[in-house]
Image 1 (tube, one colour):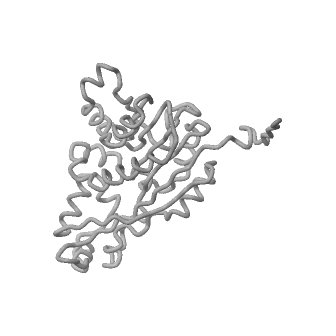
Image 2: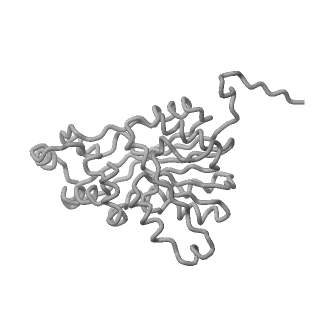
Length: 265
């Protein structure tokens, strides 16, 4: 999918309605978090909507924009105001995979990821890597698609759609990765389209058509789209959004497996 994301960099914002809305909702959740990070990272940043929001909220923090598609990072850099360039407040851009971040242990105060992790077949290695690069007391906040995404197409008989993990499985992965007391919740956001072409166009502009719909043949597509039921004259498309956040706690063992025991007076 790296090539698809790179090709979509110029058109991404035109169709990123869902990602922008979820980003706003994630930002609102930070109102309830006491955090003063020295470094923040938007991982899977696309064209940089998230890192711009984080930079506005934490102006003293060093902002890192991380994506594995270099063309997306080029868009981030292109949109930096010249005043920020002069003041050296532009985000630092890193081309990297979330499962192998070029960051030292304990580097980040906040790791943020909006609607990216569901493209991984197994998010656990990514969670372990994010736990590694967070400092003790650092926060991971993310959103991802859940299993009821495009339930209307599944009800219409689609068999090739990507399967997504539910929030309970993701919570278990966070614990397995070493995070403390993960908090998970979900909501459903519904978009609607005048015709199937609207959905297909959005997914093409985002660079994720095959990633979301799978290798749906022309014949299956015609069958599924004919069976897609309208509501009030339009085609509803549900996206289940799973939100998660978790903190990096003090380690309980050393790197070689020995237990850490703290004595307090």
